Image (spheres, rainbow, N blue to C red):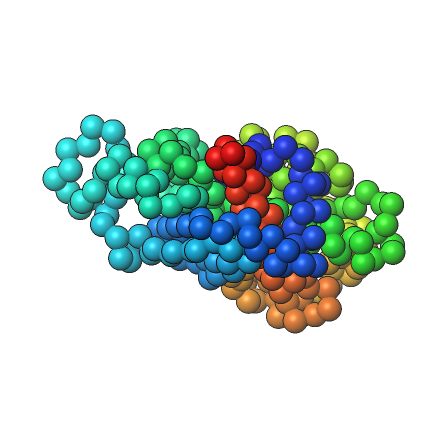
Length: 327
Ligand code: CP
């Protein structure tokens, strides 16, 4: 694997899931793989799980992780070609990224979308410039449109949960992504990414439900069943993935604030005793009710804990590719 910014960078999704679960069973088995390799984790936006799980994963592989909160401690970066830098930006990505490429063996970036300019966000202007100018393998820690480490974790958690539930063995699971209310505009990344991974995996009956106005980019939803009828979507579901996102069409806008879209135990009763997933952080009793989050059907803690194994599997693939190149 040369980079990890989308499911398209993965040659075999099931093999990557298997590798992650093998690391969960034996975390330090490849402690020598990353010896003498340094990984830079650059955050242009906040994080708890991604930041910490990727550091733990890197250390499990013997790497030295260095975290840099660019948003709080770094110079304000410029990403526009030919910019006359007489405003608030201090350093051009063309000058900063090659240096990062010399300091590190692998570079990880978290960079959220502007939610102002759809063209720039969906062109992944920022992460693509890090890839271009750093010239070392880049891993997305969530970019403008996708969150692949989260989606890999979600698929690991679904596979693990299916293996532990006899009713789901040898069954094509029904997996529903449902929009949930929120108080402010949220990126489409997690929803885009989950949809991209579910359709690439291809082993589920995958349904997306949202209010009118929240259609996601077709680039990521091709192959999914899409409906505005949440009750119909939830019927007989085995897994329900809850997530808010802002409008793609009316870019970055909040098109509906209907609190009735929040998942409750009453709605869960219509499912096949579905397990409930959310990437976290979650606004309790806005996006998801206490009764679900604190109930026995919630997978959210397991899901967040599995972030380590997803990151470790991806890092191992990248390290194997670097080590093969060195030989
Ligand atoms: N799910 C997730 O990416 O969490 P953080 O934003 O805390 O990293």
